Image 1 (tube, rainbow, N blue to C red):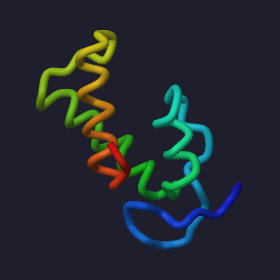
Image 2 (image 1 turned 30 degrees about the horizontal axis):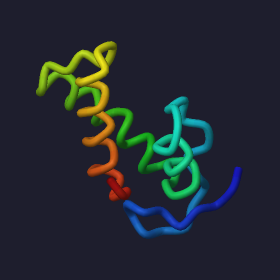
Image 3 (image 1 turned 180 degrees about the vertical axis):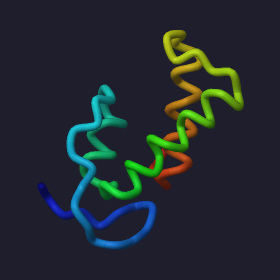
Length: 77
């Protein structure tokens, strides 16, 4: 696994690796987010989905979830 300088925590650690997210967001996470912060987001996203009653199968809700992902991980919009 490749070490990255994490956009969220600022530490240089093992990268998140393959995230399963499509396109530019998935690539940016793989290149700029450490595995620890990615793991933290995976736990947090469940609470975000439930809190905002998001349905990731719907494009509009999925885009909202991606926006929360970018915000949480300190990534560009």
